[in-house]
Length: 210
Image 1 (cartoon, rainbow, N blue to C red):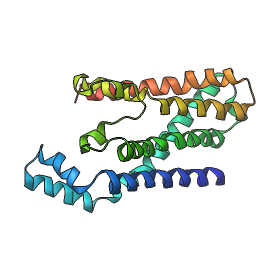
Image 2 (cartoon, rainbow, N blue to C red):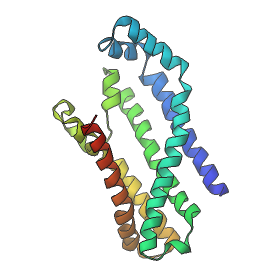
Image 3 (cartoon, helix red, strand yellow):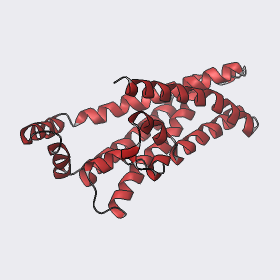
Image 4 (cartoon, rainbow, N blue to C red):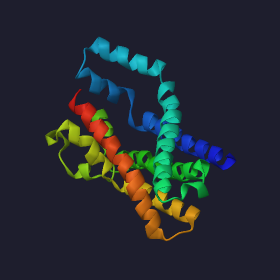
């Protein structure tokens, strides 16, 4: 339990750092104002920016919820998968949750990579560029303006960080179960893979019906 707590706060701290760096290095107030001024009146754009300043802490608070819920759901998927292989009783949810939480360290890298890219490789960019950029994903090779909105999210999911996350789960189960690597690969593919497919399907459905 203590290891999970330490790891959880390490992950949270790293996500906090990416938000802080992104806010203070990439998303300048002028950049945000330029983006919203094209969509709203000048008065409304200023109100929105002032409101975001007032509620700055919300994005940090959401990180706690997102990491906890995402790791719990992934651990649940893995637990269900292990039940089908009659292996869940040998581990317990806490150990499986630790594997899912370790995978979050890969997802943290997305934020750092994004900051690195815009600081060193793209001098001129807009707030929309930052929002739409999906590092090392399949969609980065496509013209996003020509893609149907409901297809954007699944194409963003096809990225190297997601692949890395998948293999962290595989390796974590492999270490816990002390079984053949490909057996852990099979378990993660069937359990996490199914859960991810369902989640992507729900997001696509909501976008189509919004």
